[in-house]
Amino acid sequence: MGLSLKLSSLCTIIILSMALFSDLKPADSASPDYTNLIYKGCARQQFSDPSGLYSQALSAMYGSLVTQSTKTKFYKTTTGTTSQTTITGLFQCRGDLSNNDCYNCVSRLPVLSGKLCGKTIAARVQLSGCYLLYEIAGFAQISGMEMLFKTCGKNNVAGTGFEERRDTAFGVMQNGVVSGHGFYATTYESVYVLGQCEGDVGDSDCSGCIKNALEKAQVECGSSSSGQIYLHKCFIGYKYYPNGVPKGPSSPSSSSGSSGSSSSSEIKNKIKRNGTGTTGKTVAIIVGGTAGLGFLIICLLFVKNLMRKKYDGTFSLL
Image (cartoon, rainbow, N blue to C red; front, side):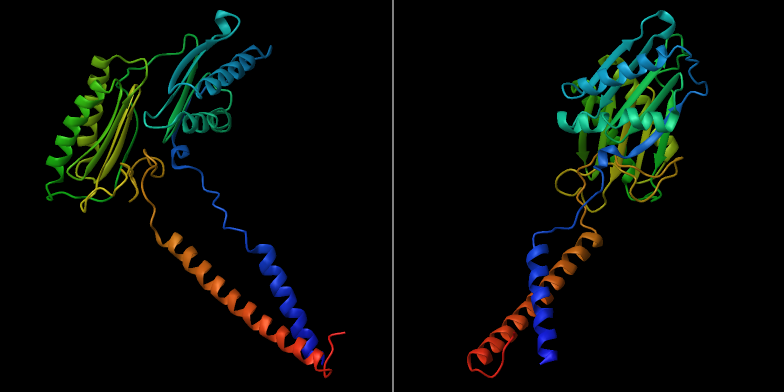
C-alpha cells in the first residue's frame, strides 16, 4: 500500500509538472548578428569638464542620434552651447537594415561608447550593422582613405580560380555602389560582396573610396576566402562560397576566423545557421517529449487500475 501511494503521488507530480511546463520553450538570448562589436577607436584625451557642459552636449547628441535612427540610416548633428563645448556626432546603419533594426543597433551605441571609451574627446564604435562617431570641435581630421580596421579569413583558396571571381565581383560592386548611391550588395559566381560609404560622401568620392578599399583587400587579404576592410569613409566585405552561396543571401563574414585585431564578426546577418547546436536542441526536445509522454501514459494506466480496484472495494487511495 505504501508503495502504491508513493507511485500514485509520483504520477500526480509528473502530470502536474508536464501541465505546468508544457508551454515553456528554450530561450534564445543571443543578440542579433548586426549588433556584434567589430572594433572601437578612442581618443587618448578625456574631457576636462568641471562645469558638466561637455557631458550635457554628449548626452544631447546621443539622444538625437538614437531618435533619428527610427527614421533614417544616416544622421549627423552638432550639439553644445558654446564653440568650446561643440560636439559633432553621426551614426550610420548598413543599407539593408530595416528602420527597426537600425534603431535596435544604434540604441546600443551610447552605452557601448561609454563603456569602451569613457568620456574621451572623440570616439568611434563599429558594430556589424551600424557605427557611431563623435568628436569635439577642432579635433584633428584624418583622410577618408585611412584604414581603420581589417580582418581576413584564415581559409586560403589560392589556385581555385577564386581570385578572378573575387576581382570581377569587386568590379561589379564598385559600379553598383555608385548606382546605389552609397550602398550595394551582390553575388557573383559564389562570391558575395557588400560595400557602403558614409552617408554624406558623394557618388564620385564613394567610388574612389570603395576602389581604395578593394585594392587594400586584394593586398591585405590575398587569397583569403573572406575579408572586411574598414576605411574612414567606407567599408567593404566579401566571402567566397565554393559550393555556392546559400539561399537567402549569406554574409561576407570571417566565420572561419580572422587575422585582424579582434574576433571575426559578421557584416550581414542573413546567413542561415544550421549548425549542430540547433539540431541537438531539436533532438533533445523530441526525446524529452517522447519520454514525458511515455511517463504520462504509464501514470494514467496506473491511476485507471487503482480506480478500478477502488470501485471493486479492494483498495482505497484514502
